[in-house]
Image (tube, rainbow, N blue to C red; front, side, top):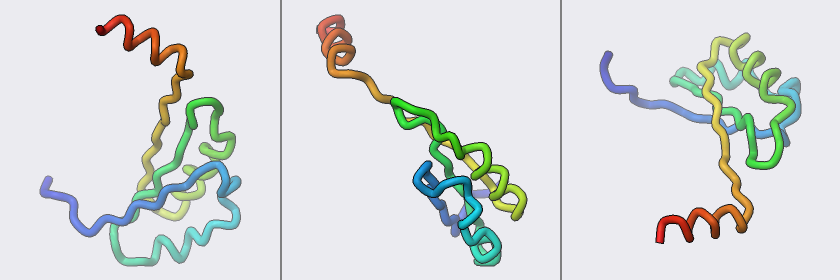
Length: 85
């Protein structure tokens, strides 16, 4: 497999809702490789629409990916720092 070129990534978060209002067909017709990247965990809560957002993108032939944001309270970060110094 050669290098991937001309890729457009679209970041879809919980604020986009369940994906019913996204212009999936127009996105899929762009003629470039599109990857829909959905947040699944925002550090303190789950994106309750992630499954629906990914499913709708796949229904339109788009590639998908997911990401997780790590969040640590300051007390945890301080404890970790004290263990390494």
